Length: 253
Image (cartoon, rainbow, N blue to C red):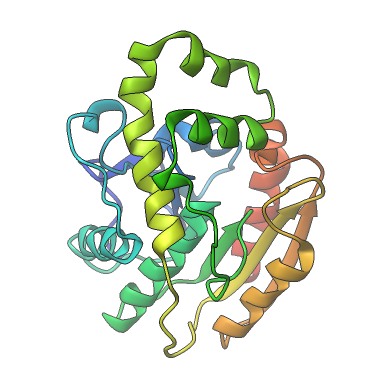
């Protein structure tokens, strides 16, 4: 048995496990903290340790500047994972922006000899997709409007309009993450050895099932696509179903 994930500045344990068969490392969506995966984490059964990345610029890392280069962010995260030594049964799960960060992290881990059993990519087109929007250069209202567009319940986002002091705390990380996504350009390279499991939802305005299927081209492993009901943040509405689908995939990897 190898080593295990430990909580620190970058990595946070959401579900501990004394003798994990699988280590699932989750990558938050744009503007999101590690706790975005808290509900999903609690739905896993025995044998799965769930951790999440805490990006700079949010929650207890609020005083740190966001990293606005997606590949630089992945490089830093991969370095933190590699410091732990060889991890058994490591899988990565990323939603939205987190899917692309997880992909770039997986590339770096595999190059350094750390196997990744499965890369779960949720709510995000394949890396070859070029984002043409430039919302990170727009106004705060532009960013808030896009958050409302994607939210399952836009009412909480209204707080950013009603409370300028809250917006001053939250929006720099959001803007930095949008910049990371909107300026990212895929660099061709060797495909992953990891299996890829793409998750997509029926009402997501950011990705179609056909776009999700294009993840198949960046792996020599198996590829599967699972569709869930709901919008972009379907995970918040169906945490148990998401955990079940992940566990099924992990068991077959």
